[in-house]
Every structure is written in C-alpha cells, then in structure tokens.
Length: 236
Image (spheres, rainbow, N blue to C red):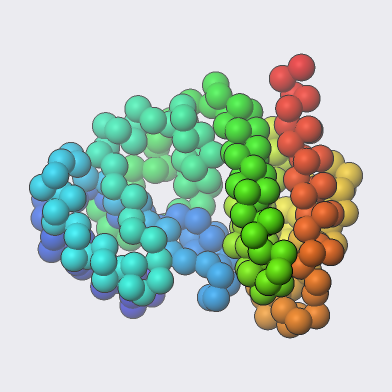
C-alpha cells in the first residue's frame, strides 16, 4: 500500500473507530492504470451509519486528503451500499472488477449488483458528459491550453463509459484506457486518433504543444456521438 493511503487508513480508523466497516480503493489506481499528473486516488469508506456526527468527524481528514490532490472519500453505510447497486451499476460493477481492500471487511467481492437499468445508466452518463463538454468548450476556444485540459480531464470518464458500452455489446471490457479505445474504435467504427493523442499527453509520450485542441474537438465529439448511438440502439 502506498504510504499516503496507509496514512489515510490510519486517520479513518482513528476518526471513526468501530463505526468503520471497510475502506476500499477503486478506479484507475486499483486497476493499475493511474497517471500521476491526471489521476487521483478514489476511496470508498463504508460506515455502520452516516449521520452529522460522521460528517463532522470527517472534516479534518477530508480536508487533508483534498490538499494532497484527491477527492474526498465516498461515505456510504453498508445498508445504503447494498440498496443502491441498481442506480450505480457502472460504479459498483467496476469496483467488483477492480478494487483493493485497504482496511476492514471486503464488502465489494460479495456485493450483488442489480443491472436492470445498466444500459440506461450508460446512455445517461454518456449524454450527460457530452452535454457538459458542449457547455464548457465554447468559453475555451480563445485559450487552447484550457480547451486541451478540458479534453484531458474528460478522457478518463469517456474511457470508462466506452468500456461499459463494449460490455453491453457483449465485447471484452479491458481495464487499460488504450485497450478500451482500440477495441471501441474497431467495434463502433470511430476515429481513435484524438483519443490516442490525448492518452499520449497523459502518459508524457507527447508534448501538449504538439496537438491542436480545436482540431481534436470535432472528431472527439463525433466518436462520443457514435458510441451514444450504439448504446441507444440496444433499447430499440
């Protein structure tokens, strides 16, 4: 376990005591696909209950954790977690597939995920992230660095959603972002080049100045639209 994760676990154990059920690492760090400059640590903290007392006990720990560059851990009671798998199918499916138990009971491996609304959640999230991209991009055309950062920041989310689109189409759902893009581009028929260039920047194999963000935006959005249509057609 990384030293910083060990520190987090110790603080959570001290802060919650016997109310702490489990601490789980998930996301790119758990899958071994974390890029230092662009990825953070995603942590699920399962408690016996979540009340204002637990929120108050979290304040100092979460502030310290955010200052290190990662989002606050997710707080769920064990009962809430078991009851919410139908509306967080993507998240809990990914956790079951790739997670690292940092402390306490392994509440993920035995979790039963209700996938009745799986296709709808994938389409909803794809469309919502596309709308967010359209909202934010217009104000960044005058600043190429900001537009590039927007694309880089959105890339990880779209890789996750493309992987789930592949799974819905009975295809393999690889963990590595490059493998997802390669397989999705072949399966759904879109140009992988903008994604490959963004991945190369994230991996520090290409300099940001070597790409033109405005030129990438068009084929990037077109690819997302192709995947959205492929997921939407499954309900027809």
